[in-house]
Amino acid sequence: MMLEKNQSVIRNNFRIFGMALTQALVVTIFGVVAAIGNVALKLPLHLPGHRGLFIMLAITACCIMIRKPGAGTLAGFIAGFVTVFIAPGVKGIFAFFDFLLPGIVMDVFVSVIPIAINKWYMIGTIAGLAQLSKVLVNYIFGSILDLPMSFLSLGLSVVLVSHLILGFTGGVIAYFVCARVVGLRQISQK
Image (cartoon, rainbow, N blue to C red; front, side):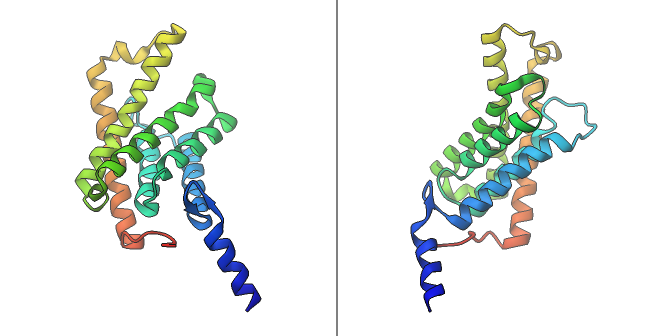
């Protein structure tokens, strides 16, 4: 009896950004998976933004499964934080924003259009737009730091299209995986 009472107190009172403890742990797992997938999985696609496929898959799955405001942002924050400490690459600390901004964009669109989570083409489009936000981050920091931006030499249209398509694909895969695994139910409804 006492154990059940303690569990209900923890479940009902311990909240992180409005999420229950279980939901916050799931968001953390998705953030870490996105960061490790970004570092460990290297697809030989030779397309700009090809790692975004896996990143958007993890962040989109997080938004679909949790359905709380801030889930995507928190997953992006955790993924960026882990990436900066594991393997920041040539971007250094600015790699953090490659994860944070797509998470914020996912949250904004999912909050504005909540029906989008139930439609594969809408969640794919939102994931594609969130992936496009990475181009904006790269362009802004490249301009601020006066870095040579190699993606402009490829042609900005190719970069934009590839980011959009790969983000869309990651979002659609996340939708169908979540539909298959959990039937689009929220984790820990309380």
